[in-house]
Each structure stands twice: as structure tokens, then as C-alpha cells.
Image (tube, rainbow, N blue to C red; front, top):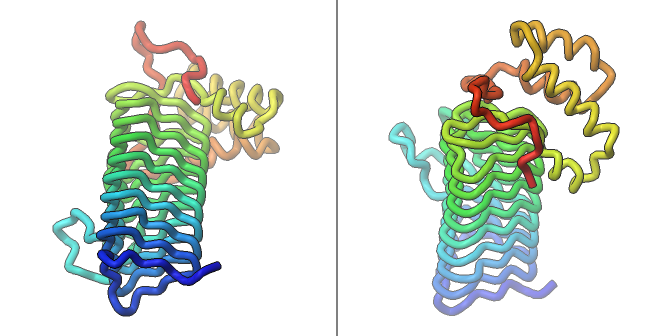
Length: 276
């Protein structure tokens, strides 16, 4: 690949590490502790600061800020980090803040993600691979999002919330608790409305796997009795099924927020696929 191309109006600090084929467009700023791997493109007016690493082939659109100080009054300028995975696209006006020493010390976004315009990723968030966040998604600190999850436009994720793998969060949802892997939630405040069946089909989960997940889901969230007893029964009956056990393990992991549950009100949504 070719040498980096830096527009004359861009400001790249001494100490920044630039890989082959990096493009830094007009009016961008790159700090001294930034690493841009091969083929990264900053289109224009982007600000990359702090101890930040951006993976090969990532595409950063205008007016994005990455690695700036967190919006945390306890933060005192410690050299915490931000890491963006390869081939991730970050659209206009998105903001991604570095970690804190009271958290994990690092904000992470995986490979092949798409963060649409005005997404906010707060300090110490950990976003997996292939995640899509639509326009105006906002997340508090310490949010975790599993691989291939989809977060609908203008959704708000409370700090410390966990979103499971291949889950779907509907647009304008207010998510105060954890969303199980493969689950679909809607509303403010968000409620569990079914499974992300469309998303599972798109990602190659066959009919038998989807049937097993749906059967376990219905038993766990729609069956009679206490939740702990239902969870124990699903664990015992599906111990050999890694997909069901992924849901069980997620539910059993200690959490600050608890789980989003199915609404028991008469006007609750049916147990159907609402996802994409």
C-alpha cells in the first residue's frame, strides 16, 4: 500500500502512528497517541485524540470525535484508551469517548460495525463485532453489546446495560435492563416481545436451531412459576444445546440491571418476531 496521504489543512501531531494507505482529509486533527492502521480513512473534520487505536480499513466520516475525555466528573485526565476494530464505519457526528480508571479503562468497538449518524458511545462501553447502531442511538457508560446486535434509531441504553448477541432493540426504545441473546425488545420502558427471528435467519441459524431457541424462550419467559425455577428447568433440559445455554448463562451472569422481561399486561405485544 501507499504512504499516508495527509491533506494540507489537517493537523497530525508528532508521535501519531500512521499505517500504509491512511488518508487524512481536510481539517482533521489526530493526536500524538493515536494509531491509525493500514487503510484507515478520515474523510474530513474528524478529531481523533487520546490513546486511540483504529483498525485497518476503518472509515470515519465528517465531524466524528473519537477518544476524547469521558463525560465523567471523576475523570482526571488518566491515559485511558479507545480501540476501534477493522473495517468499522462511523458516520457523521458520532462521539466515542475513552474509558475511565473506575471502569475497565478502555472503550472498545469491534470489527465490521456500522455506527450511524449521531451515535454516542460513552466511556467503558464494549461493543462486539458486526453491531449496527442506527441514527441517534445513545448509550451510557459501561454498556456491553454482543456480536451482530442491531440497535434501532434513537434508542437509549442505560449505563451498565448488556445487550446479548444477535439481539434487536427497537427504535426509540428506552432500555433499562439487560436484553437476552437473540431477543427483541420494544418500547419505553423496553419490554421483551419475542425473538429476533429475522435476524437469526439472516445470520444462518437453521430452522431446527430457531425452533429450539423459541421453545426455550417460551418456557423461560412465558411459562408458569417463579423465574428462578423456570431458569433451572431450562438449564437442566437443554444442557447439551449451546444456543439455549448461551441464553441461560447470560441470565445467570451477575448484573447491575437485571433482565428485560415480557410484559404481563393485557395489551402486551404477542410473542412474535419484530426484528431485522
